[in-house]
Amino acid sequence: MTDNYVHHPEEEAIVAMLMMRATAIGEKNAKDALSFDADDSVEFSLAPPLVNHGKDEAGLQDWFNTWDGPIGGGVEDAKLTIDGDVGFWSGLVHMTGTKTDGTEVDLWFRQTLGLVKKDGRWLVAHQHASVPFAMDGSGRALLDLKP
Amino acid sequence: MTDNYVHHPEEEAIVAMLMMRATAIGEKNAKDALSFDADDSVEFSLAPPLVNHGKDEAGLQDWFNTWDGPIGGGVEDAKLTIDGDVGFWSGLVHMTGTKTDGTEVDLWFRQTLGLVKKDGRWLVAHQHASVPFAMDGSGRALLDLKP
Image (cartoon, each protein chain N blue to C red):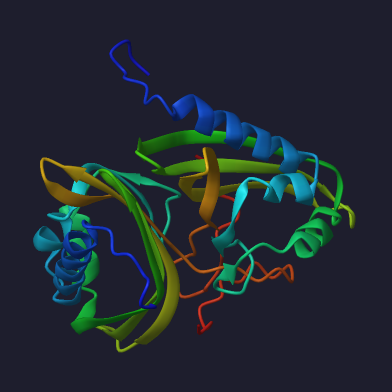
């Protein structure tokens, strides 16, 4: 960020929402986390299927419950683009922690968020999370890449 | 689409741009395809690395040249959200064709595009393409999912 960087007036509201959402995810509170998502959310998740429509609080809480303790997070290379009531965010997300089966997770993935302002509140209307896959014919998801 | 669906006035311009861009990709013309991308484009590709910044015409043309004949495409579950000079698009993309080594490709992947209008032209400022991976511990990219 340089001195001549111009903040969009809505940037602060969006970043605050994203931070509250990240806190809810870290604390594994599905109800709170999904309170920042639009009802007709379109999700392309790390896990199958290809696409999920709408919110699934029970499913998200079940997944949160596969973690022992909080889910750690961090972001690099974040970029937010906004005009009017629409925006999109992209960045590299670092997810860390321990699963209940003892597996240690230390994963960097790419995340894109589609944002809309509805009734004065910014919401996540679309989310896309992924890792690339190896082009060597192995069909291996690349789970060990670092920024 | 229902009778009370309200078109955003910019929707036609964006869809036309995306169709011209898809045609250039199908015809494997890297220069034309990249003419629809912003100079500071952020790309999360099917292939590593995690992120690419900017445009790489030579790299894209090299990849196009690994295909024998045109690259086939199709889209399902497309959704476009626009306000002012910013929008985002999400959909499931079907990529088909034959590689020069004889491999037949028939892949469905998820795609998100971040769109910005600059000097009166809509451009792709961000693109994210992926498949999910298996959560069975195999770390296998799921290359055979269908919508």
